[in-house]
Length: 287
Image (cartoon, rainbow, N blue to C red; front, top):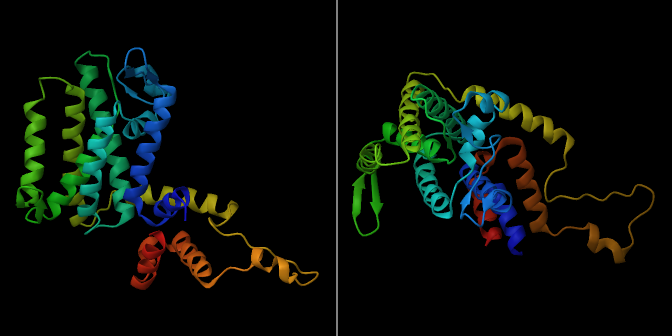
């Protein structure tokens, strides 16, 4: 299995958190090609991608309240955010579903974007913002709100409580509030507040991610009806038997058939519907 096929398989079975990391990395590579100014050494994101505080751009491009959360203005910005996303998603998905994870990511990004725009509008400051930090902060705080006393083992430090890690990150944000990147810190804290509210409402029986999941399922079912199942090609001939010399083209070995059946199951019911044996089989194949 070559690298491209391995990446495709990891994207297919890795879960929503891995897919979000793929999307963020993909958007960063696209931005390097189209928006990076090599002479100045920085990015120049257009108003239809970055979230601007001026009213006119986001009135005509309201999707920027979400697209800004998939672009980053530097490699280190992307690298640090994806590390924290991988860490916080593992904690969050221990207790919540992938649909709730995706719903929280989207909704917290939108909420933080609204707070950022409103704050800068009243401060009469014109600026723009990109980055997934607000949504990632929401996921981390949501997991911390639900299980603050969870033990987390950190390299060179040892076991610490989850709330200690989250508290340090929030304190650093507050300390740097007036030093620079004020808009970024506003969005971080807004995301943290939304993550806290999200879990508290969920504990009271209110799932804010449900509408988002419904919309995603609608479009997913819409596209699935018109698209073929990935990694599967079925050849049929109703007029005459296939010659023996061509049988290798249309006959799949037992392992490939099992992969196809598992991928069909994932496309219909999601990765969580797989049995332990099926997950172990995919893991071995992925290696």
